[in-house]
Image (tube, rainbow, N blue to C red; front, side, top):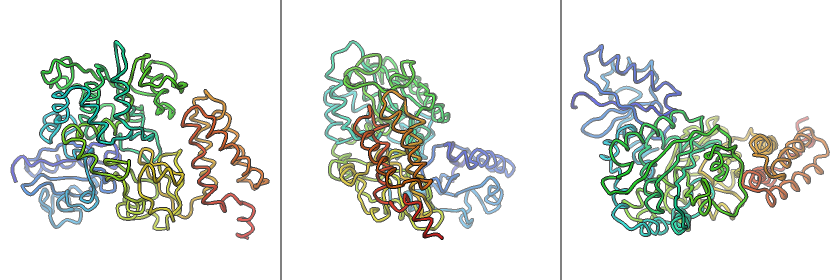
Length: 520
């Protein structure tokens, strides 16, 4: 072991919420008291949230993990020989061999939890900026075609081919174009964007810079919700570091090419995750959905051609340029190419982020990685794709995570969020929640969404009260059809998805009178 011994403690928001800051301070204090020369490096999380705070020690054989470490565990760890406390119960062995991490295919999240997210040198030492260097050596059109060939589809939820969107913006004639990153991650059970921005912000900066080179844009904006203060701080720090390093600015890596990046903070409205509402918010207006056409690729921010992509979409691009589109497309299945960072949350024993190629099943994610429910009770339903995603019943867990397979079954992959419910969940109340959520978060521009959600919530209240259930269920079904067909955007158009899936797969939960009789 060389001195000072490097010890890594996450400063990711999830790790901090369970005491990571106190753990780091206790380690420094104990080491000083025992005259052990250590250097504590604050990283992001590796995504195994059930192990946080996960403390890692650098050794000649790789990093050795300890976790989850409570601040009160630190003295005992040192008494056991920490930083070499092999016999301690919290000793996990080599971090890369922890099964939860070793079985993943880390492409986008390869550096998360490994590097100091404020250090450009750390990022470069771990292979960072290879994609940007490759992009600077290519004609812009070739960058776009590499992204097209990779098969990358928008990771924000819609799954639209990213390269096709870039090709449209590149072909548009304009005196100015923009790159906008939608980091308004608001889906329940999702946290991949936050983890990446807090743990590897340089990857997002690199991906957005490559997008600017590809379409001829010199200005980019990262739109982050205000509920993510750590991510906002990490992005601002990383942008300043890149400007000082010359990887952002008026002469990117000495190429003479220019790209500037700015962080804008949203006020936390769910609707601002919709691209056109986000653009309105970026322009200083209230976030309201725009009618289409024109699409943002033709007339987006300030009326100019604009690439709007999610954090994970931009973050996938550097590896495509660095390793070639074929390497990225080698992962996945069918038309769903590459890897997807799935986020496992809700009633789950081992929550966290799992990056794998498309095609993995829900059962593998929930049982093999997640360890089943936290309560130990059987899984009854899984909501995939955020609060507007369908409830997948337990007998459909072998469905592969693939855009087309999910769509054919009436579900959606969305942003990769997976929220698990055990057999105590009341699916009629979950259907009411969908309407109530939409009623609160609707921007109010179109009547089907604004009024339909309120009427749906009221009708669900009558069903929950056992009032004329058959008639009210029929009314809910009519409302779902209307909202799906007539809403202006996905907010109103997808709210029926969780409601209809609850009605289809869990009809017994809506028959309140019969349930009461059975209970008596």
